[in-house]
Length: 359
Image (tube, rainbow, N blue to C red; front, side):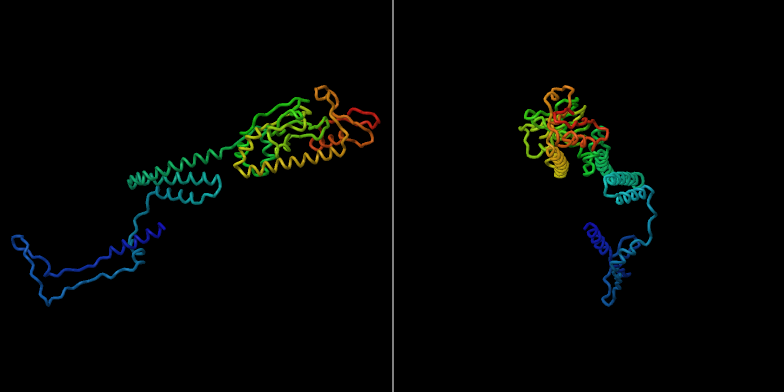
């Protein structure tokens, strides 16, 4: 629209410049006396004819094609450099780095345009306008450059991001937003309880960073939680913070657990549908993995966790209650351990006897 408006204004201006030339005759020219005073003109004879020459009206195309019979010299190098940078800004790709490219090219283009207006043409208004453009683009450049700065995490957190969130295309900035809801990183000693059955409230979301923890119910081991798995993923769905754990969770070795504020995390991702879908996917997959382990464990259903072990005594983790029921839960947990780490902690062998045999 601006281009069409400028074109129409140019056409109107060009048409207004078309003039009608009417040459004068000798009778119309005032004569002067010897004293230098003007002498009144006499009316021309009626029979005399006035010769009027009307210039032929040019066409529209002649106004635009022939209005510059002689071009002015090429502008200064500052003017050329400004337009080169403007051209480069038009070629910037639509990417985060392309926005940096765009802003830098615009800043340089406006800078050279201002220099040209200041030192060559002496146009104060052009200098002021280009200075305003430089300031605006510098602000946008600073913001974009700040957003593109590299975001680094601790090596354990970095491993979690690469293993769980990066494959789902979660950006580092989004993951940092999730980490802002973190409560702490809890260190657990061997045999230390993380959660006690029907005593500890479900007010957090916990992810194992290192070590291994065993989940049990009524002193019966259900499954083992390995690094990069959640301790309380089943409680994420439909369990309020006023309820209690229905299982006990104990460290099998020195472990580190990343703990989030459960309600704070839910409120933080509530406004981001993408992060909600990511957490539902990761935690849902974790729940399915745990259900498969529990289903396999319950099909054996011949192991229990003795009370003396919860008190921290150095005694066997599991015992076999009956003989003749197959390898039992000990071998099952061994397979779970070896599936993640071939050199994992071993539970021992089972003696196939008719008596209760410690593992």
